[in-house]
Image (cartoon, rainbow, N blue to C red; front, side, top):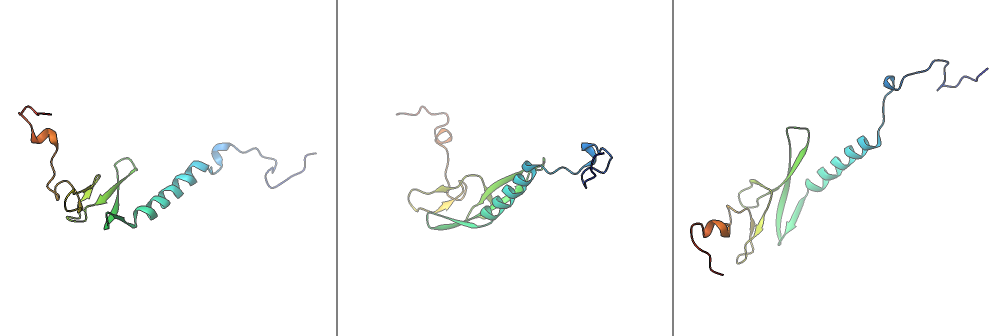
Length: 109
């Protein structure tokens, strides 16, 4: 006769009847917490404090943003102005792309 243990009460259980504990679920949970802690802080870029922001996407994901120190809008990319050394988004620093500047002109090299 088999001995009875708490895990073997004489009845076979199905996997579907048990709560699952997956390593990937715990790692995902802790990675998200770590990201929130890191991104919730303020970083310093070119001696200026820049805040970080997180938004949720439509499919249960997250997107990370900088907060422009000048206008406080979300931006994926910030720039350091070559003369003033201010940090900001393209709009605040009044920057434009080379391709737009010479649109319709032949660019000399």
